[in-house]
Amino acid sequence: MRPRIVVTRKIAEPALELLRETGEVWVPEPDRALPTEELHAAVAGADAVVSALHDQVDGAFADAAGPQLKVVSTVAVGYDNIDVPALHARDVVVTNTPGVLTDATADLAFGLLLSVTRRLGEAERLLRARTPWMFHPRFMLGTGLQGKTLGIVGLGQIGRAMARRALAFGMDIVYTGRRRADPGVERELDARYVTLDELLRTSDVVSLHCPLTPQTRHLIDADALATMKPTAFLVNTTRGPVVDEAALADALKRGAIAGAALDVFEKEPEVHPTLLELDNVALAPHLGSATTETRTAMAVLAARNAIAVLRGEEPPTPVRS
Ligand code: DGY
Image (cartoon, rainbow, N blue to C red):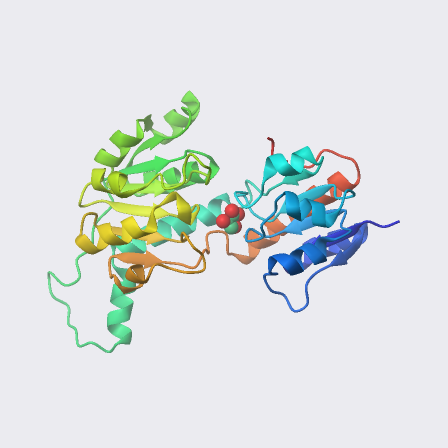
C-alpha cells in the first residue's frame, strides 16, 4: 500500500511532485493554518507529515496520527514547535531544513539592520505621507556601520553568514554561544569569543541567531537591554520569544537603546503595539527565508527527508535528541 503523506501547508510544486511519486499526498484546500482539532483529524492515519513552523507537534499530535507515523519533516530550520523527545519516544523520526536558508536569512537580517540604521522605513513613510522636505546637511542622519562592533549570539550557520556580511561592511565581530567555534571559523571571521555580558556591553549591534530553547527564552530581557549601549541596535531574525518584547518596546520608547530590526515576534502574528508606533524599529513579518529559491529548496529538502524515512533510509537532515 502507498504511504499516506500529509502536508500541512501548500509547499513548492517540485517538492509536492517528489512526494506524489512516493505516496498519496494530502494538502489542505484551501491552503491555511489548520487549528489543532482540524490538524489532528488531518494527520490521522498519516505515515509521514510534512509540517509547518506554526503546527504544534507534540505527543497528542503523534497519537492523533497513530502508531504507523514514521516521520515528521518540518519545512523550517527551527523546531521549537516540536516536542522532539515525545516524538522520539514514539519512534517517530524528526527532520528539519538546515543549510538551505542560511544566506536568505542572513541577507534579510543585514537588510533590516541597514533599514533601521539608515532610517529607510522612516524615510519612505515621510515621502509617502507627502511631507515637504529638502536636502540639508543634517537631514535624517543615520548611523554608519564601518568600524562598529557586531555581537553575534549563536555562531551557527546563519550567525556565521551574518558575520561574513558584516565583515564586508568593515565591522568587527564578537560572538557568544553555548560553545566556542572552531579556531578556523574564528580566524576566518576574525571573531572573538566573549561572555554574553561583555557582548551586550561592547557591541554596537547585537544580532540574535540562537535557537529558541528553554535556556534562550527571554535571553534578551530588561536587564540585558539595560546592559546594551544606548547607541546600540538589536536585530532578531531567529524566534520572537528569545526577546522579552514588552521590555524591548519599553527600552526603545525610552531611548535606552537606539533601535531594533525585527523579523520575528513573541506572539506571532501579533506585534506589540508600541513597536508599530516607533520610528526606530524596522519590521518584517517573518520573512527570513522568504525567497522563491530558498522556500523551494526547503520544501524539496523536507520532501527528501520524509521520503528517505518512508524508504527505511537515513534522512539527509535529522533532528537528534
Ligand atoms: C525557519 O526555518 O525556522 C524560519 O524561521 C522560517 O524559514
